[in-house]
Image (cartoon, rainbow, N blue to C red; front, top):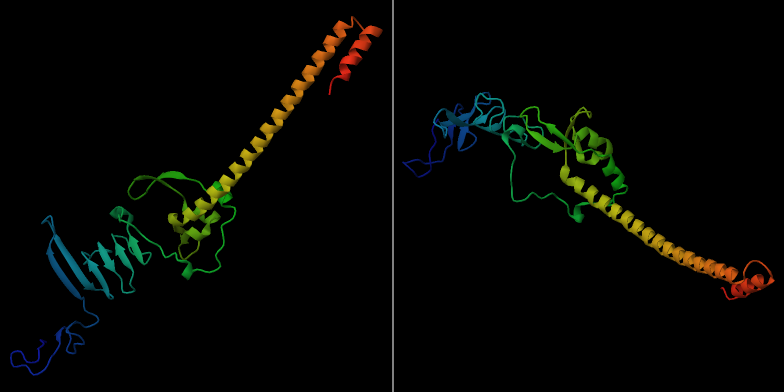
Length: 250
């Protein structure tokens, strides 16, 4: 069924264009609901195959995905987006085998306007001490990486871990939100360091005072020894000389 434009080529009304249906509901309507949808093909960059975009399959939009599970880019009917061959597991999924995305920045909603029951994290240092940094190899690509194990993190900081519907198998860790824990852990550690420095300074002052007292006692011992020596023994004259010296000591 072909359409027309009012006033063009003697047409007296606007009509829609339809493919596969006799009741088009839009300017271009491809149907019916059980049809395979729309597919556009063209040569790929290498000239060795066909690149395609398709619209259909339960309302999904796919690029280079006709007859291929997943495809390179897919927008599902529910709005979830997938880049790479893996099906969407979140509202936006970038498949691991597709490489790492890169950007100038990535912001998260964080204004005080949207938050309530705001509380400072406590025992952050203790939680950090329970976490374990590990190295590992990815099963699908064999790439060697470092990071955390989501299940381990979930046992300590469940707020930064997402789980499958079964509530048992972890999906991933929001590494960015761990920054809040690291900040408070650093502050707690700094308090401990300052407290230890104050204790060291107090102990150093006490040690200095004790050394001065020991020095004074040593001086007094030498004075007594000198008095005993000048008194030639412990006779009356010696005892008198010693007593005279001791009387001058503090």
